[in-house]
Length: 229
Image (tube, rainbow, N blue to C red; front, side, top):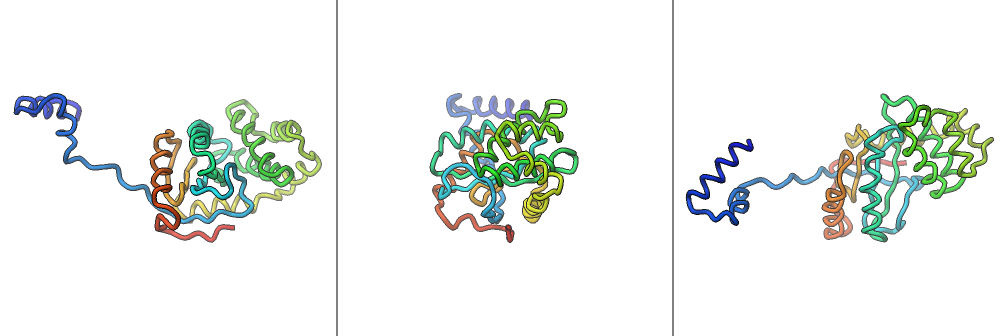
């Protein structure tokens, strides 16, 4: 393909196209990137979030704590929050994958942290879970208890919640909401109704966020429904 485009460029120059005008000439009949898929996923009242609760753009992040790509997505998300400030609200949604043995219990640990200490507790353990996911034993039960102690959780309540799987149902509901709109990989982001899949660079988030801000409330039209929880 590269050789063919070089030949195309050389032909255009021979036909009189200025080198400074080559790019415009070569892409004149090209295709633009396709529009992202739209989905409807309601936001649960109990979901942990950061940012402005009344933000113009809601980003739902479907992710899990054992996925290396979820850890990689942290930097572009940090850039989003820094640049868009009060215009953006980030909501975490659990989507533990079957291939990751420790993902479900880690999600339940984070849910218990939020129950005890609200959003601040959730994000405190969230950061530790992602930072230590590649460490041997970093997401096993002993490590979860260490992180819980570090952020000052009630350990008796924490261990009881994990032993009895108190938060398993809400984790499962998040996963069902994702699969209802054909999201089955992590990370995946629903940005104001537009679906962005994978660990994408900041520029991809920026393009969709700017689009949502321009369109205003009520758009995009969703392709599927979700009852949420």
